Image (cartoon, rainbow, N blue to C red; front, side, top):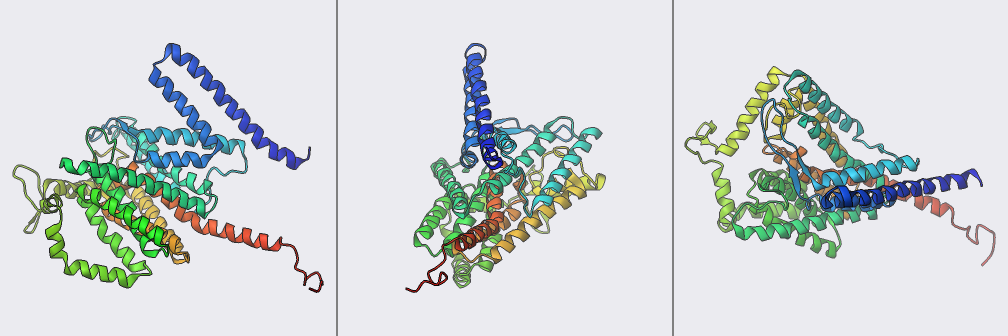
Length: 482
């Protein structure tokens, strides 16, 4: 057998060996589980092995499972707050789904040496610096006593989890058609959770994502819908396909209703920069500017027909409550919720002054529902600089991809990502946006797709050129007369 034949057989033989081990372990778990362990644990272990085998054979199938589990999986674990004591860690089913698929991916890269564990992307150094800064800050916090439990390390592990999704996307995207299939799966997930959100509207409660436990998280759901709405709106604007435009507009309308009934003011705030980014970079600028002018002129009428709950929620921002801690700026008084976020910024600055370099460690400064204040207090100047570098790297490279897009659909996708990113940056003033699993998993999935679009295009161009060179010579080149 030649060396080339042996190289081709080796990965296949390794795959059979790994799958054989999985089958043996599965049989052992069934045998032991039926006699010594509860039925639920046994079924969970078997499901994990089946998922491992599926992702090992076809990694993209595993990615589809992760996409659907992002918003459609229950949470369990604990929540809490406390300065110096750390915080409880909330786990979701997709955490374990991603863990199993990640392990399967590691096994596959070990068997198939041609696969890269970490692809070379423009964000690698920024991601590494951000993770390292969080880890070092948490280690120092644990050693100095500002963190009294292992919860900080679990939080850092969850931050790494988001980047696993990013690298799974960039390592396994085969072509641009494959990328669009992943986007389609993300849109289907958004449609499903939007229908579930619509069903919550008649209850009169704030709409939240499904499977959020006893207490919902409307602000999280609002941030997720903000990001997905920006992508759908931009594709609808840029595409030349009437079918795709109708699909995106329908999805946008479906998402808009539960979005407004989340009553998330941070999400409402994010609409402004997202819309402005679309207006700035869309090829249909006149239409969008006209839409803005129309909205300004008709704003009194729009406010009149707006749902009562939405109007009351916005008005509540400037309502003072007796006996509650409120912030007053001149004659403007903010409600307790908004005041708490403003107070957290002041507390973060005070904490930063005490520990300016690496901060108090992740979970070491108590709970703050404001991303920028939290990063500054928990990881200090080093962590905040790493966070800003990561944000800037994503923005700069996404803008570079946008400037080179000639395909209308791809331009819409990248424009929607940039607009949604701008919206999330505003959302982060009133929420821990960039560490919330149900926002960050879709965000980093689409980030991976956006970063890979130029690479996939270059591969297709090279393949087309190679195919052209490999075509049989024409009759003229052979000197044959017709």
